[in-house]
Length: 530
Image (cartoon, rainbow, N blue to C red; front, side, top):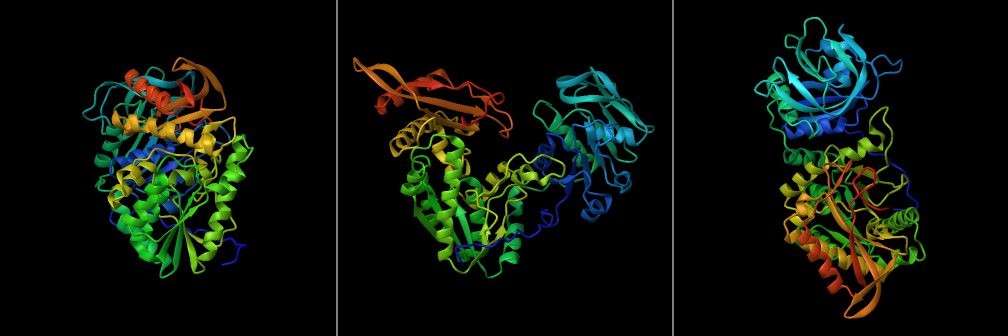
């Protein structure tokens, strides 16, 4: 393998539905909650995938799903460039559920009346169920729901029963059981709709007749077969970061092809306390995965000398990772396949949704460029983060790795704010973070938090310790709760716990004389500071 690597592309992936399981497809009209719909359907035990709005009836018929869900979207059905509904989809004999814009499309296409409301309906709303029909069977007549729309359905199409209304929406739900077409104006997929999951379950089980037997763990055998078919007897490498995504991908590939896989773990010296040792112990010692561990701390710290700008840090760390990885990959001359822990959310955010904005580009092995001469192996490409954790647990990955909170690729370097990431400052931040995690685990709160970490700003404060004036570092505690990191709320940690954390930090870390708590939610802030 030469040092200059030519580009290859990942092979087109076939539908990921495991053999013998039902599937419900979500037709994406650009709604902010579209991928959440697919997640909620999977939580009901039915495999689901997001497809673009222009997918076409022929492709849907080929996939033969048990049901279709039309997502929400930002457009008005009357806008000249609004996504349109392919009328042929309604002639396939497949049950259809329209959500928000999806319901308005159904009403508009089938002869109902959709009009601009005088007042938009955004956020929590009261739902009044006048007739339960199939979707609201056994549920309260009065319930709350989450709305996000300005157009509203004034009259349902002929042949439809109007099931519910809300303060602003005269028709908040309708159905035509004879054609198996249903519509709801609100969003059942968000947690702010208390009975949303039951409504989805009624559609999946009672209308679509789904078996609801799919689990993330059930795809392990399916993916192992796919990996073997793709790789054959070829050699495979994996850039192992120690995060849940690359770890589970590596274990799946090792289960499939054994010693044909070699993992490359680059320790850049920017990880949390003891994490490098944990990764090596899990893969080399417990799972017996061939592993090359590269101690590159000095290289990375040299590259970061004098650098305080966060974006510059990110780019330097990503570029140096690529160089180290390329050097190690060049030593494995027979390797033609590269494992990446790409997730379904990565695919969507990277522009996998037609007509959606690219939020960010994802390269799971430290930001690998396009000129890498490997064929990609991406066994997690159709899974969400929570599903990856389930697969990891099924594969026997240690609990501490399965439930490790999200950690940025550039590591602790971007949690040192406004200053250089020196060895001394990294060690101080590492020790402070270790105390925080230790106390949060002792309190039994680790799994309840999306993320908890420390920030080390480049400021000093005056203090008094041992009757002497001190001029020490400030540690910021950041802890948030979230379902998917799109929004996050600051965690209300118990006062006694905060007192214990602060006491330990100032007692055990001689350079720290002040501990503060960040109580900013997202939005307006972000979870990480940089």
